[in-house]
Amino acid sequence: MTVRLGLLGAGRIGKVHGSAIAATPGARLVAVADAVPEAARSLADRYGAEVRTVEAIMDAADIDAVLITTPTDMHAAMIEQAARAGKAIFCEKPVDLDAARVRACLSVVAETGAKLMVGFNRRFDPNFMAVKAEIDAGAIGAVEMVSITSRDPAPPPAGYIERSGGMFRDMTIHDFDMARWLLGEEPVTVYAAAANLVDPAIGAAGDVDSAAIVLTTASGRMAQISNSRRATYGYDQRIEVHGSKGLASAENLRLSTLEVADAAGYRRAPLLDFFMTRYTAAYANEIAAFLAALTEGAPVNPTGEDGLKALLIADAAVESVRTGQVVRLA
Picture 1 (cartoon, rainbow, N blue to C red):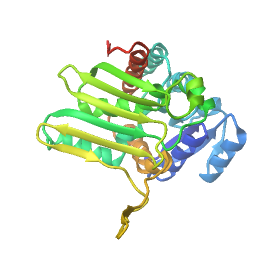
Picture 2 (cartoon, one colour; picture 1 turned 120 degrees about the vertical axis):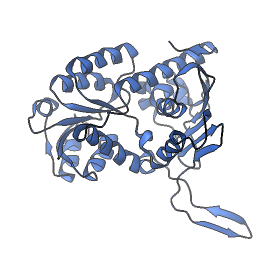
Picture 3 (cartoon, rainbow, N blue to C red; picture 1 turned 135 degrees about the horizontal axis):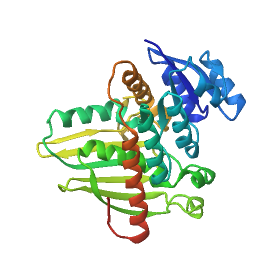
C-alpha cells in the first residue's frame, strides 16, 4: 500500500522530511504547501509533487496524511484542521508552546479519532534505539541514571529565539522526551540551572543558552541533561544509561572512523556538525514508523500525549530557573 502525503511547510525541516519521504518505500509525496511559493515549488519539483494550498491539501481525496513542518504557532490549528478532514497527521514538535492549547488540540484529535504522531526524531536514531533495546532486554538491569549531553554547534539567530518559546521548549524538549523514554518512568520533579554564556543577543531576547537539568522519578531514578547552544567541536549528542547490572551508551557520530596516530598524538575525524546530517537515518526511520502505523496497525509513537508531557517538563524547567527551586510535576 502506498501512503499519499501532503507536506505543509517547505522550509529547512520540510526539506528534511521531503528527502525522508523520497527514501521511504510505500510513501509518495503528492503535494506541498508553503507561504513562500518559490519554496513550495522548489521542493515539489524535486520530488515530482504538486504545489497546492493548505486548504486544498486538507480537502484532497488523493492525500491520506499530512506532515506539518510549519512554524510552531501554526501547528495546533493545522492538526485540528487535518483531524476534522479525516487525515492522519505527523507534526513536528511541539504541538504548541502553551500546555492549555495542546490539551485543547488533543481533545479534537481524540474526538475525531485521528492518528497523530509527534516528531521526536531522536527516538528513531539507530544508536539511541540500540541503547533502548539493551534496556528493554534487561542487559543493564534496572535503570538507575540517565545522562544526556546535547549541545548545538552554534547558537541560532536572535530572531529565531524570539518565537521559539525558549531553549527548554525548543531544544531541551527533545532531551526531556529522551529522558522519559529511557527512564521508563515519569519524572516527578525537575531542577534546572541556566545562564546566558554564549550569545548576549540570546539573553537580550529573554532566553538562556546554557543549562543543566536533573529529573527524578518517584522511585528515585534520575536523568541529568547538559545543554549548550555552542560546541566549537561539532554537534555533541551523547547518551549514557547506567543500570544495576551495567551501562549502555551511544557516542557521537563523526565524518569517518579514521584515526591517525603519530609522534604528535592521536587525531580523529571531526563530529558531524548539523542536525540534518547527524539525524538523517532518524528522520527516515521516523517516517517509516509513521507509515507502519497507518498501513500495518502499529501503534503511533510518539503520541500527542508524549508531546504534552515533554512540554510540561519544559514549563517546569522554566519555573525552576525562575525560582531556583525544585519544581514538582502534577
